[in-house]
Image (cartoon, rainbow over all chains, first blue to last red; front, side, top):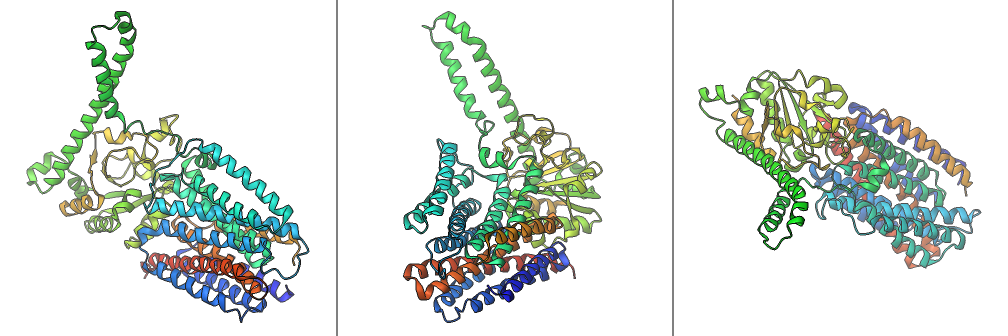
Length: 521
Length: 97
């Protein structure tokens, strides 16, 4: 590598850093992105020229194919598909790094014998490992986000054991590869084992832990590239890979802090909690049957019966409590549905019965809290219409964005931007949390865990200690969620059963919102 | 051939520099940032190009197959990543007027 090449590499790396720092402001962000892309383009052209491979036709064919696929995907994609697309592209980058690792490990494209064969072998093997984990992990994550595969966390028998085993095997293979050098079977085995590791690590992550996984994989793809760069001795590649790795790590850290969880607990314990709440009605039936059987059994040993009685009674009591709350919820649900349907009721009725529309009609200060449900229902445009109407009527409308709302960092911001909501109206949690008290009304759209007041006091639950939006302090809360099931964390939200000033509008958020917007007069 | 220690040194310096620069990005722009970073991670294309190109004359068909696959994957990553980031940022910007 000549001095000129080295200087150019360093210059380009600085370009990339400047480009990224320009992305910290909305105004300059587009130029920043273009600058990074330009640096990359120069890097690519430079690589082709300096290596004297201008006449190799295969690379042009491959570039053409890749550019075509990439451009079409970028153009066709809807904003709603953003999380899975980012995950997918990310995986491809990781896969490319793994392949570069394979090539270098096999000694393809290396001119002469390297002065540091063990370093080259080691970094090549490491690039294979990290790249492959990124590829398979990202594909699984993308599949989950796109709902091609079941999005819930999946745990296999002996999951942790398999994880540890795959990890150990990976380390052994890297050592073997470093010592022995080019052996096709080591490369093949490494691809298989690390691919399996990527699968088993990503399959147990789901729901709200997705943003963290995505940013972690993003970080890994950068690290994989950087290490592939060490293997092929390319400064630009090492530098940019390192920058990407750092960014992913930082975002991961931010997400973890926002959820008050450690990275390790998410990777290892993502799916430990059973959703016992959802299973309550089924339990009721079983328990009641068991009690009936016990009572009606004439041959039953009386002593046995007496011994079991307290337990059975307790089960019955539990069942009754569960049923009562279920009935209360259903009743509330029913009342809300009817009130929405009769939103256009005569004025006198509106005087006595408050509906979401009437609450909003009188509100002067409204805070909207979006969550993943808004993304699912594609309700961002309906949200915009509601906000417009409220503003037209003189109300002040703001949006409260929790750091982990949605399925990737900044997910809500992108969706709301797509609906033309100016970013000046979006507020981060710390900036707006004290204003909930004074707000006339809060509209929750498809959000659950990020505003669950149980996070403050429900010790032992997954969300305990997680900073949440102080929606419960608002006087009037309108909740437009699909159903009343607990969110991903599986913790009941006490807001749902608080009757005072809480309006539940269940069903598709888009339709509910449009209905409410229509009814505001 | 560059000395391994220099390469590792560059990695460390860039990681630290990147970390501090990225800290200034507000959460509003985290998705475009991530998507931009994602595009940048396709920089491995540079490595793929060099390996494939150099292997063309000396190594067999397998080297070309692996190499072309690597180039295709990395190029999809680069073009898709930058394209999507650009679209997203344009969305943020169109409201400015």
